[in-house]
Image 1 (cartoon, one colour):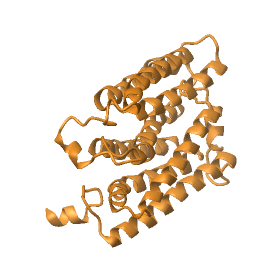
Image 2 (cartoon, rainbow, N blue to C red):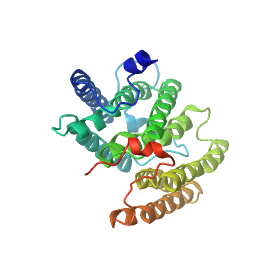
Image 3 (cartoon, rainbow, N blue to C red):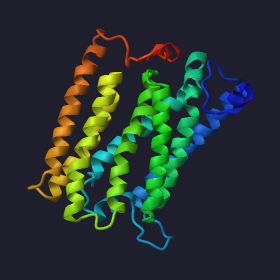
Image 4 (tube, rainbow, N blue to C red):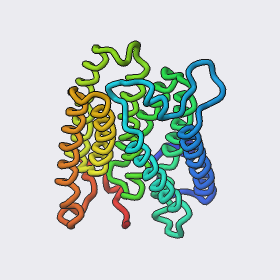
Length: 287
């Protein structure tokens, strides 16, 4: 068992060897740049290979008037900010502070896998291989969910960039891509199911806000709900979907403030309360 623990890249460790740190520095940087390059390239260019419809990322979004179609400006800003924050996380791998380096390495394997799944998703999504795209999203959702529950109370610089930011997007992307993937995505039946499933965003967000006091998840999901709401409003003013999206956005944002303000004023010294003693293994680090 000790040998398996030693070679398992996802195992919890209190410290990392010099060679392990170097490996994480290389792989996190390379996969992060790979994720950025394909995202930026296919934001402005469509692929020239493949047998199905080949469109840019937001060209696919705009081609299907689904119940989860997003405003590409808001969603793009979300990703730009996320990429910048991830760059800050990677910078901590090169820090002279051993505690910060070990903390960053602890989530490095999941971050690398996230980048690879994001790369794979973009490559198949722009080529209209939506079934494969959904598979990669679901696998990444499992990866990020596992990461979240193993490190629910980790440092802010890690949590937002590597955990809650990508996880919130992946949860929304399951519906975003899934709505495109189903037969007749613009039908009345599809819209009705969209009116129902959009409420899962509220339930999902409130779970993390109430149980873990995680205001970053609440904020992230409120921004993405706004992206859905704006797009749905401009598609059809007389409709339920944009109303539901804005209600969800408002509730999550208010709940986020309820948790974030006490934390910012020092009344709640913990960013997220783990429900058991394992939180002591993943304390908050200084900013």
